[in-house]
Image (cartoon, rainbow, N blue to C red; front, side):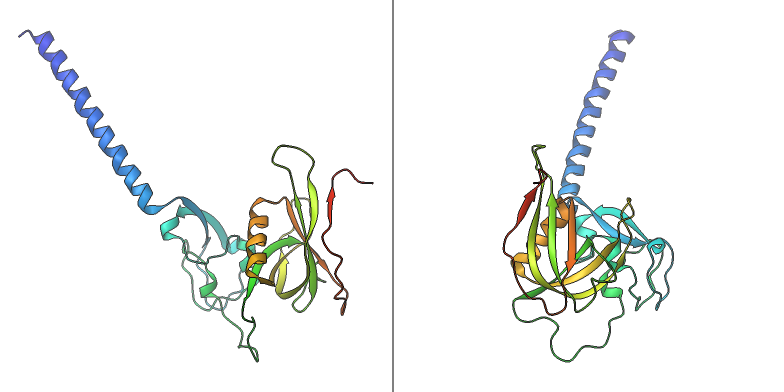
Length: 224
């Protein structure tokens, strides 16, 4: 067998073995991805945080990690942690979750009644009016998926605010609040979907003692 032919055979064998190796690596990577799950956002500490520190925006960052390693029930956005006090120290790069926060002494009686949930939202609204104990209406503005006219809906009425704090303003400078609302399970699912897909959620504070309801109301972008 000539040297040229021997070299060609060796080259062909190397290519075949390389293809097998690449295929095996791809199968292993696919199996690993299936075990770890898709990438999700988690909130982490930019720097070491001491116990007792009130969390500020500059303390937090968002990283994407495999779903398997994400904390259960962790906040979807850093704004929901702002202003909270840490009960334990958190190293730089470690995940920051609600389980690390200092909790106030339990109030007399249960905070939530049977069948109720506390849904957390970051929404447009006045930090001076949307406060714990206030009652609000929830407006949801969405765009149509086909590019057609959008609409604003009076989604929920007379909802109690369990807790609220100022959130960073929008890029346009509009004020926002991070609020915990007393809702049903169905309403909590709706608000979660709205937070993910709607253009804006807005909280309108009600006058004290005003419990009247107006019923469903939807307005498109063609007014008048």
